[in-house]
Amino acid sequence: MTNNSKFRLQDVFKPKLFDMTVECAKHVGGYEKYSKTYRAPSLPAHLGTSLKQVCELFTRLVLKEDEALRISDKEEALRDINRFRELINTQWTTEISSLAFKDLNEKQWEKPAMLPLTRDITKFKDYVTNVANKAMTCLTLNPTDRKEMKKLIQASLILTILFNRKRIGDVQYTKLSTYINYWKPVNQEECEKALSQSEKILTKYYKRIVTGGKGSRPIAILFPQTLQTYIDFFVKIRQEHHLVPENNPYLFGCPGTSKWTRGDVIIRKFAQEADLEFPKQISSNRLRKQIATVMQILNLSKEESEQFAHFMGHTEKTHNEFYKLPQDVYQTAKISKLLMLMEKGVDKYKGKSLNEININPMSEFAEEESDNEDNDFLDANESDCTAFQAIPEEESRPVSKKKISGRTFWTSEQALLVKKHFKSHISTKKAPKKNECMQLIGKYPEIFHDKDWVRVKTFVYNIYRNK
Image (tube, rainbow, N blue to C red):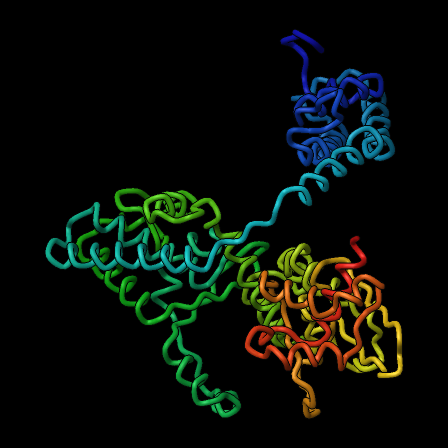
């Protein structure tokens, strides 16, 4: 097998060579023996599937007695292939896949999920639009300028991908005939009656075509009027001056060739030229994840979510699994809210969803104290005690007491007055009562304008606690 120029692929499918095949798969995936990690963990795992497919192919060729195989013993060859395939089915997961997918999963959650910045997307769109406008102006003066024609086609392709958040392949392979032979639906008065006035306007503003996408799924692409202007302009020049060969069937065909314009290449090129903060984050996949994240924040209904998934070119299951709110955001913003409610009690939030409950992690933990308590205790871990308080987002109850929320800092003057006023409390390690704190605040209202009695009490408590 090693350094044997006459060794054929069909010779691999022998049970005695299975261990060697496993080692080769590890080597291809960049396996590090000491760290037990792969440079490309998904590759060796997928090689197992590929080998099984090749086994099926060779089985068919052996049964057909294909002359290209030159096999002397047909039964022995079939027996070896079947045994080799059985080893893949039973041992490949243990030898390769389990460790490879473990490594892959760890790399995925260790790597931060980066979505493009909104300001970068806006800047990128403005730059591409500017390129399209300049190219259109130049082509108006000189319609045979192939360089400007190429720029206009590239800019139009990027703007289409950017607006629709589609896979690059779904857009770049769009046929010219599909765009030209666009037909407007008729006899849909009943559907239009169900739309709002603004939605009716939108149906007239956008042009919608359907093209073939991944897995032969029908993919809808929308073109706003500005983008239609660019495309109609270069299609007209294309037909009149033949800058793109007639045998090029693609809407975004590359001038002078029969090929399409590669969306991934030009997106990287324009992103670098646009001087963005994070140009590498501008990609088709990340743009799709960004819009899906926004859709989740908007809390669409099941029907709306299903329609959105179909428009994006995948099933709702795929949308929920791969294009959802990043786990770090969800767990920090949602699950932490649930954990805080566990500490506070959830009785008063009965029947509310997590989205309907607002948590202010910087608000003060305050409890009413009775005036006859001689020795109150306020638990705090910081000099200005902060705990979690859950507040319903919509609360109609009148607020009877003014409460200062958020963290504030103590000035040296405030600290000095508190220490002086509650000198005896500090020495005896006794927390002041509410009326005593209010007496100090009333005596110096301008100095303690940002403090309430709970903050004063907490401050005194932390002074003698830390002694």
